[in-house]
Every structure is written in structure tokens, then in C-alpha cells.
Image (tube, rainbow, N blue to C red; front, top):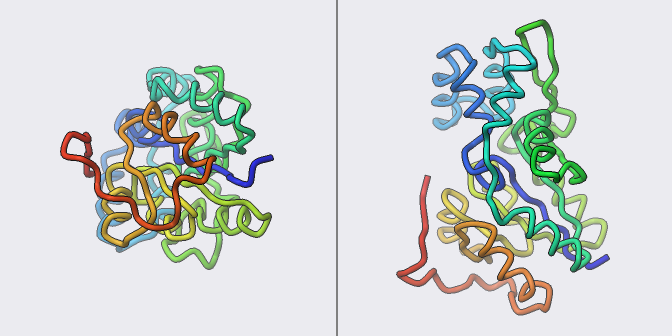
Length: 236
């Protein structure tokens, strides 16, 4: 096994839209947006926010699956998974989202063999749901349901280098612990602001092209130059 271990975000990184938000938009009571605002303002942690949002969902099992079945993933992600396997790299989906949604979307794309670390979605009634957080950490600074920093620390303790691939707020805390980051949107802005070693990407075709250079040791911990003017970068 190669010493690099890949920790990859899911919502907005693998899935093109945020899959959790798509579910909430469709079937949660409107109060979920107030909770989202409180989280963005720092009034509540992400675990508390997500748990309370899940409690607002009113949907059957079939309706939730139908939402998942309509969510596309990055077209180049399956090829990236296969290439990572050929290079002997361990790839883990680490998400502050919901495991049932992630597993369903991955299975739809014949990627159901991937390891997923995420919050656990539990059916509490015919149209009611609750969230459990088996990967939470009481010491988590940002109070996430899934502590990505703990996942990175475990990988480092096992002797791995950590490659983080992500896009958003749930990836910000762990970015400084990673040996290298492939970043877009909010995570990219954070890495640029904090001088964290990173490379911008738009989609997994970019990551696929850069992966051999990473394995060959061509990236180091020094921040890379900012992307060229022609590089497509989004902030959210």
C-alpha cells in the first residue's frame, strides 16, 4: 500500500449538487433554512444543525431514494477511483453528510465498494428520520457530526500521508492537518488565505491528471502559485 491515503468529501465534491441540501429542499419543513443560517453564523455546530434538520424531514424511504436517484456525480470520479486503486492508494469518503444518501448515490454509479465515514441516517417512523453521529469527537473544534480531523489523525498515526479533496466548510478545519489538499470553492479560499499546500481543481478530471505527480513526490508542503487567469474557480 502506498503511504498516501485519500480523504475525500462527498457533497459538492463527488456529488455535483449538495445531496443533503437537495433532500432538505425537497422534504424538510422550511425551518431547516433558519438552522442553516445559524450554522453559517457560528451560533450552532454542524452536528447540532444537521441533527435538527434531519428531524424536520417528512418523507418515506422511497421518496428519499428517489431524491438520491436524481443526483448526478462528477463524471470523472469513477475513473479517478479506478486510477487511485491502480496506484495502490486507499480512498475513503469522509463526509459530514448522511450515509444512506451517499451509499445510494455511489451504488447507482457502481461505486458501492468504497469505504464511507459519515453521519448515520435512521428511520424513526414511516415518514420521520433521525441522525446518529458514530464518528463524532467530543473534542471537535467545529462540533461536526463527522470529525474529519480525527480521521486524518488516525491516518497519520498509521504512517500515512493524507491527501484531502474537498470544497466546503466541513473541510476547512482538517485542511491544515493534511499533507496536501486538492481544493475548490470555500476550501480553496481558505487554503489560499492560510498558506496551506494545495492545488485548485474544478472537477475530478483535474484531480486525475494531477494524481501521478503527487505520487511521484512532485508536490511538497510549500503553497503552490495561485491558479492561472484561465483557471475556472468558484467561491461559495
